[in-house]
Length: 449
Ligand code: NDP
Image 1 (spheres, rainbow, N blue to C red):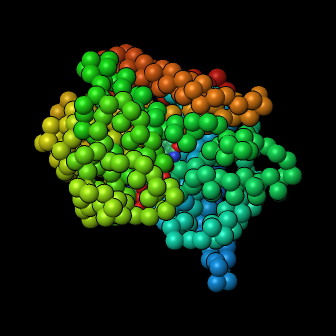
Image 2: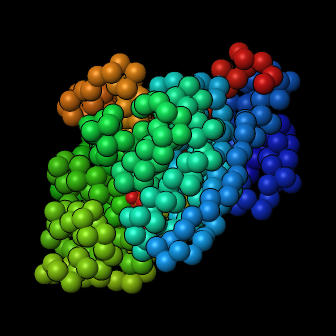
């Protein structure tokens, strides 16, 4: 429930204009509920139309992406880039290729990205993009032609001082390579900092592949240690998804003494009471690009269950949702609670529905929002850009150490903001407030633009 009149008025405007964009509305509402704690202290924000500007992207680009399949048939997909807010730095945020991508999804991701990037302590504004193109089942050549067509329009909107995309769902090293190659060809310049998540041979950063997943575990360890004097040691953990974020969250969790007992893809989940064999999982997902069901066919004692949402019914101590938005609903959260889970650390962006968050918080579970706990990916993208500018590359250990430090600082910023708001340990509130205050300050300093 919103109480502050200014927040209510701006939210009503967003509802009126963008009522059909359900994911975007959900993200705005969650942040506005947190801003109740700070908006009344800043009457100058209303005079400056700060919130009205904050919820309106600076620029939205939507474009046609025509491409030809291996049989010579022409297909047309829709491409997007939402340049949400550049108050503290050039727009930065990934590209998602998935059939569910639409303007609402890209806007919610861009909006979240503004606050996340602010939390990283690096000078990055927020943006996001993508397409409703489905890379699944496409040949390498089809993926390449699609990426080239996508970049043939996107290139004019990006640049290392304006907007620097990266990967996200459906956009990994292969896609980033094709996108960068086409950009370089069009502009006739090796502008490495224009996109991150690049391969190591052409300007990528060591540890970027692992960064989001590792960062989640660094953040989670900090929460467990500071708030419960506890750790991953001996804990049974569910990591949903089995893509980039999930794979490396699972790896770091195991390194820290946890046992990952269930993982999923969009069709179903596997349960392995002995702990997921990550070498096998990496081979299935990274090399063979197969469904997760294959894991249960090949690993003794593992079970496969259709339906990814039921993964939360597996008994665990810690849940790390690392697949997609709204993947855990109230029923999922209640199943976790009933099974005695102590924490939910978000790896994906907005993976819990508002009802799931309320359920988890009401029962006092530790909870971290994605914009804080998954910020390690974009933070390391920032480190990749720094290395590109310096024309240097740091070792894996150096990048990993910087990532670890950043995640600790993000935790501290979120925790301190939660204390200032009078709700110590409410990291969702802390992340929203800490992320927003820096952006608000920069926006106020730069005038009505
Ligand atoms: P990937 O494409 O590598 O993997 C996505 C995984 O999630 C796959 O296992 C996929 O299964 C599953 N999945 C996708 N959509 C759904 C769905 N609707 N329901 C259930 N499962 C689904 O993406 P990433 O690992 O990169 O991204 C995962 C999440 O993390 C996203 O929310 C992303 O925005 C967020 N994130 C990613 C960052 C990064 O650095 N990559 C940084 C910060 C956040 P299937 O193969 O069947 O589709």
